[in-house]
Length: 112
View 1 (cartoon, one colour):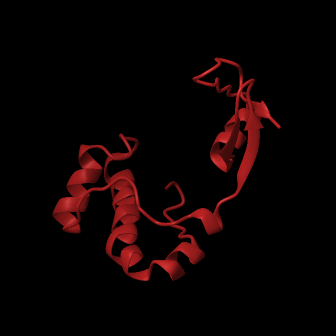
View 2: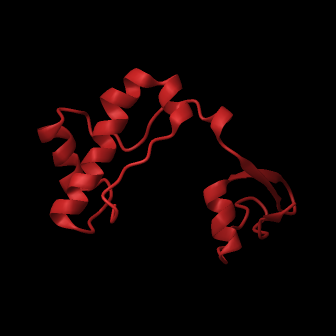
């Protein structure tokens, strides 16, 4: 946001062109406009929702329904009772010190 620039995933765009143009681009441009006009606010708060509805005429959905299996990487983690495929985001948070506990056995989830 601070660089006033948006980046889009080229593979997801190629696989979902209409949805990208109809939903993703307005979604992300709304974030940029809200940042410019209001600064730091809730990511999908009232300002963003208003921008989506009033400026773009779009339903203010915070998530998409794209199949991302082909473009995501997962990292294998385990606890005392199970294994987990964690996203890159969660993996990086763990590398920075975050801890996640298994909801079943309460053990810390650790890299396999």
